[in-house]
Image 1 (tube, rainbow, N blue to C red):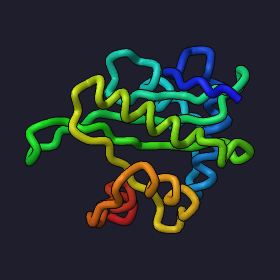
Image 2: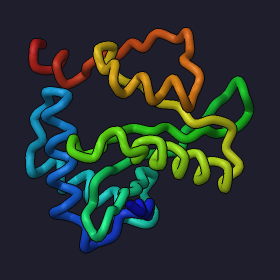
Image 3: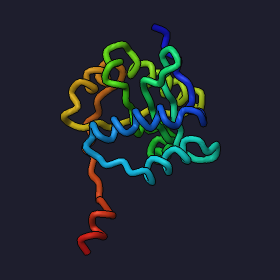
Length: 154
């Protein structure tokens, strides 16, 4: 097995979409055509902050990673936030997730960034085993205000 990690390309859309739909289903999120097309337009626009990588095995896309830069005011630098990371279920345990994280790390280093960060669901213990082996678990707790949900109830 020889996995190639490379940037997303225009011809990847349908294979990427298949994986991204599975990612959304894993997190019990509805992925509409509109959301998928919007994200794809971001990933393929050279001037958009969202960026993407795919893992390819024998011509088949088997993993994806989406990332974007962010400012770190207290550190006086910028970081790379790994928004989405997913490996096809039948390909897990082969180091593909680690390879995508390593490629993300390499990208951050090439850009002179200070950190790579990501979050995962508390119950995503299988992925956490990988993450614990390649990164340091922080003590930060994440909060969010869902503005769309608040608008609907107002």
